[in-house]
Amino acid sequence: LIERQQACGGDGHDVGHDAGRDREPASRLTRNIYTWHHPRMIAIGTSKGGYLVDDRLRMQQAGLFPGWKVTAWSELGDRGMIAAVASNWFGASLQRSSDGIDWEPIPDGPTYSSGRELNQIWTVVGAGDRLYAGVDVAGLFVSDDGGLSFDRLDQDLQVPADIVSPDINLSFPQVNRIIVDPDDPTHLYVAIRNHALYESTDSGTTWGPATG
Image (cartoon, rainbow, N blue to C red):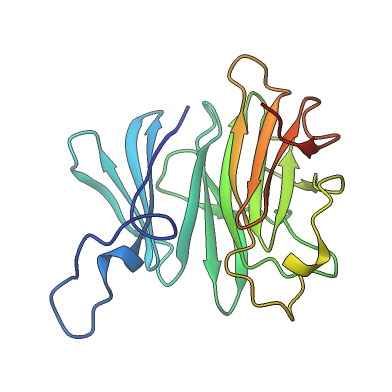
């Protein structure tokens, strides 16, 4: 599994500023850090691209996805890894790689057909052969083919229209946490920031308010 370590960015804390007048605060640059175990790598996502370092913190790949925000990482088992990227001009998308060096876009990634904007892919979580993707604006998608294609899985979440309306100024209405029960992969929790926590016991077919 990939171990997520809270870093600066959406829910993190400011760790200072880079020197130089034109540089952004580090808290805005660093978005997420993951440990990738095949091979053992640390993947760092920032608002200006991605980086891979080994477990001794030696740089292995620098400048991945230049000009794109890297918002999430996940594993594809022994098939490699997946990265979520976002651009103010081109929108959000997923990239996959077998070695962390050569990347290719996933053409059939999460997308809304109508009614909502997909601003970025906030989190990607693996559960056995499945991949779940939580997005902004609030939504949940699933892949059963190793990340080659994704379908919506949030029809039963009953997300109120006001948190996805473009006329409502609600900060960060995204699915920002997906938790899979390690003892039962059909048991899921999904958190929508500033709204609610949902629970499913049938792999996301039906949802209800979280209990317990």
